[in-house]
Picture 1 (cartoon, rainbow, N blue to C red):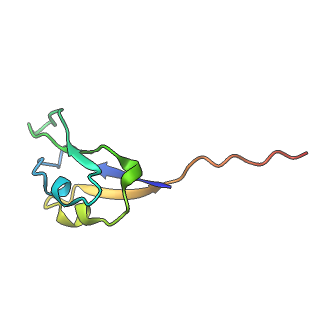
Picture 2 (cartoon, helix red, strand yellow; picture 1 turned 180 degrees about the vertical axis):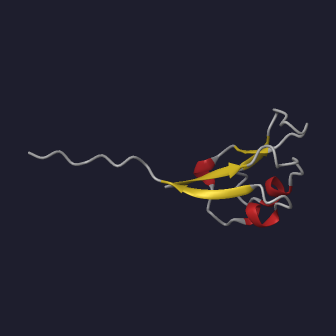
Amino acid sequence: MGYEHIIDKDTCKGCGLCVAVCPKKVLEISEEVNTMGYFPAHQARSEDCVFCTTCCIMCPDVAITINKTVEDATEPELQ
């Protein structure tokens, strides 16, 4: 099971605090500019996230939330 970082790209100012405090280096600064002219953070390696929520706590703009991702479960075939 992994975790999906939902980053409000238009709220994020690209300060990099979330990137700096992530113990697993899950987040990176994007190369794309948002509507405010900033380079927001983005999730680079979701599989490495340990759900410590340090990025959410450190974000001064409260632009990050984390959700658990559920893999598609296939129903067992009846025989």
